[in-house]
Image (cartoon, rainbow, N blue to C red; front, side, top):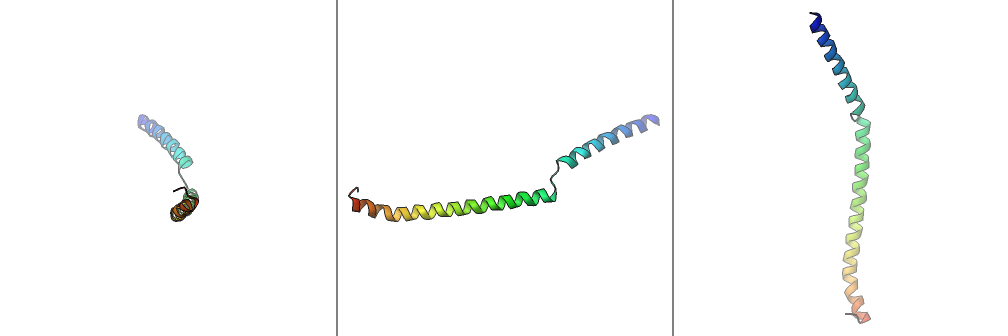
Length: 74
């Protein structure tokens, strides 16, 4: 009987240790909310950058040929 109790105590200590490690490393709700907010900001910045580059490229594609022909480079 004492062997079983000693084994249970050892296993309980291991479980407590594992639980302590899990509590220390798991993400909290606040951590997840912060990460999501940061991701949304990054996505919004990326979208605006892509839109600006696309509009700029289209604008340049429309203006550049006429400008080159006026300068006599084409």
